[in-house]
Image (cartoon, rainbow, N blue to C red; front, side):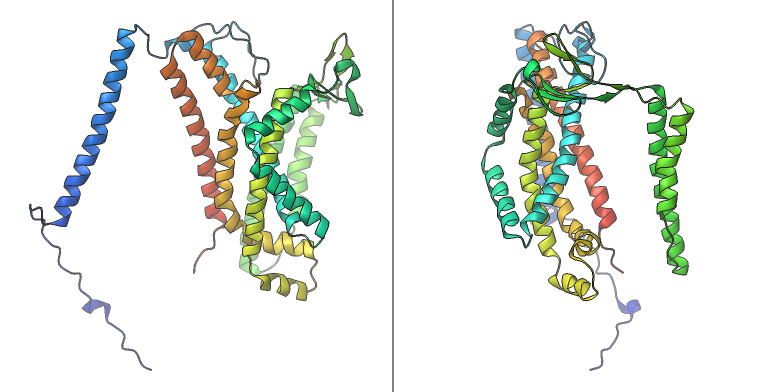
Length: 400
């Protein structure tokens, strides 16, 4: 059957209709309704602001963020930066933000790894492994997160004291005071080696990108791992050796009624991290399982016909394709984990919500305190969304 091609030169753009100042014109109605809605929203916001200002003036409540420079007098048991009760409220809130990020970032990494393993286990041909994973997912997702946090915190509090602490490995002690671990005695050489490792990661990425570009030109594959080994291992090692190669380790020791030295993971942080990780992993497992099932079964059959093992097929063929389905809903779970970390106040972990609540109770700056909490979570959520959207666009299929 022959088809007559249409000459683009004969295609004409329909003439534009002139805007008539008449209610019968749908464009005029649309403009009027939009103006009215925007005006109503602005009016409501203005009324709320004026009403709030009036009530604050009547009750003689001070407003503004000047309180941030005042002495906090607030004890904080866990801080990533130097802090004392003599520090300002601004520094106390900064500690709260860092504590929130410490939970969110580590929780996202652990939940992703654990959830992926559980999701793959649900698809296992081993009947027992598959059923155990299924029971885990159904149990974890059906129990409220707050109850799970209280459950883990109660278990940690019921552990024996430091003198009868559990000692599963050399230098590792678990008691009702938390988890004590050996920790590297950090020196400037370690900081420089860490910086060299970051530089090596960037150099490896740039080198791999250049090698892939050359492979697309001549079709010859090139090995990347020797350069990666040199950049990511050799360079930090040279920097560490140049800095004196410090290897001192701070081992925890029982002195009196508590441990001294080493690194401490408090019961509050430990319970919060376990609860958030296990809870979110249950949802991530279902996302991963659905993503793998979304890949056509013919991909498995074609790969197995070539003699590839199941593990290789999963890693090299199925999971890269499943990521396009997995990443968008995974973003929501990362956001949920970050926002669910606000439940830390229930078990005494001092995150941004806990510290901001104490601050507003001491200063009476309720509006400012709530605004700070909202701004922190909004900033973290937008950052996660931006990164995940960027990553999703990188792995998306490009239509030709």
